[in-house]
Image (cartoon, rainbow, N blue to C red; front, side):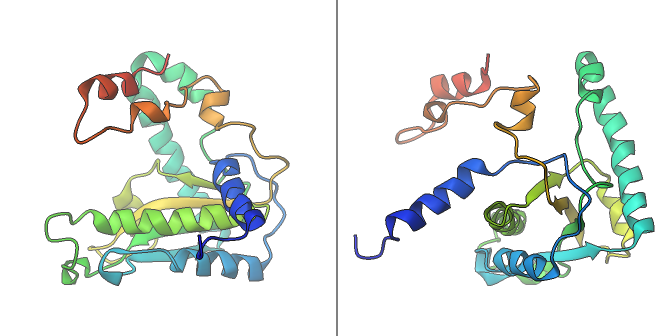
Length: 223
């Protein structure tokens, strides 16, 4: 095909995709600022509905703010454990974030004044969040290519994080990103390695010409 990448370039893309991991264990070594800027540029190159580019990246360099974010996540971790009921003790054994360990910490939020953007969002306003997810995934893959780990932390009260970071009322924090050097990447997704859940099969989520209930039911079964 005339527009395809050379074979080694294609393989590098697939390597980043399949070797990417949601990291929780980090080394404390700082991340090269030039590399951080490259990763932010990769995130900013993501597709977005109506070219609204709704992502906002807040780099957290103040140790006190980092500690406060960690405390908010810990509060939600305990509440999440209780909500899981019979799996509470098992959940509390999992490492769910590396906020105090990673070399670089960022908070990603949805922009303010999002209602001004209608293109592609009139019936699906949540496409702003989908766009932010694309930006985070760009950063994730670029980080893996640079040999850096990244972990997406979503256990927090958005209102509390918004207040802590003095964000406008119509913004919304959606991710705390832990970025940094790692001793090694997990051989498989950590939650699978820890026996929390198994990965689903591709065949169960690909349907022909409409919804297939048998496949939908199989997709929920991961035993």
